[in-house]
Amino acid sequence: MGLKQLNELVQQGKLVLPDYKNCIANLPNSVLKKFGLETLGSSLPLADQYMVKKYKNIVVLLLDGMGTHILEKHLEKDGFFRSHLKGTYKSTFLSTTVSATTSALSGLQPCEHSWLGWDCYYPQVDQNVTVFFNTIQGTETQVADYNVPWAVTPYEDVATRMNRLGKTGYMVAPFIEPYPQSLEEICSKVKTLCDQPEEKYIYAYWNNPDGLLHRHGCDSDIVHNAMIEMETTVKKLFESLDDTLLLITADHGHLDTEATIITDYPKIMDCLERMPSLEPRVLNLFVKEERKECFETEFQKEFGEKFVLLTTEEALELNLWGTGIPHKEFRSMLGNYIAIATGNLSIFNDEEVWLSMHGSLTPEEMLIPLIVLEG
Image (cartoon, rainbow, N blue to C red; front, side, top):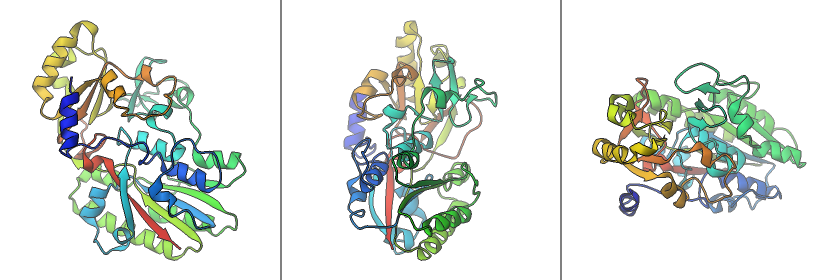
């Protein structure tokens, strides 16, 4: 179907395919390799070269949404972050927090962990589930009396794996006790852990600039000022540390987009078995068998200039979700079509829309920085 269109856009540099030897899923495997533990996949060569030296502390700080495009837009070339930028590598597919941070935590590719997007279809409950909240898509209703994503698609994060295997790992994030609610609090916790005597790995996560980008857009003064503040805060942290390798990265980038609502297209809706899942930039579509031809015609008519439509089998042949052994539930969570944004349009399920988005394959969404600070 859309393979020719997709390949042409890749050749033109307008889209970037994932590379599972050079992406966020490889970084935690570099950490495992550094500590002499068995890796779960390829390590990241860009990071490996800085792990040759012995350090007491290996710290990865992930700033959600701070893709290379955002970094270069808002921070000075000779400033603290960009002057220590050692290279650009890639997010996962989808280039979104649920998928990419799960890879950053676990060292697994998306097909292996199956945390695929903000809303995932789980056949066990026959519902699209908002993964981080365990709620039915578009509602605040719990989908079950147990956590469906963790029950169906559990994974082990690298810090837990290290502790189980006799090494020391920590995680610092707003959703982990003591629940730091600012980057300053996160940095303070990282400092406290780094001062402890043992060799260790620390994964730290902060949910901006992503949240600000969604609400205010890529060019806003609010985002600009926040980026400067984050750079200053992390600089202060690093200057307080000894014997530490600090790697700063992101899970994905961002792109200002226009919005449309899928329910405004009744001919397309009539072809669907359920609402689209995954993300507004990449739609997972379950199309009625008898309506496939109609669906392809209508979707191409309405969105052909802003989305490429693939059959799911075509997307799988491209290894978009990874090259590893797929999770046993992976394929059952996907429908029969995948629509991938190629332009600046996002297709939402309801009226709650955001100014800036991510998830697709544009360079703005896919390319992420690796900032290296050696102390």
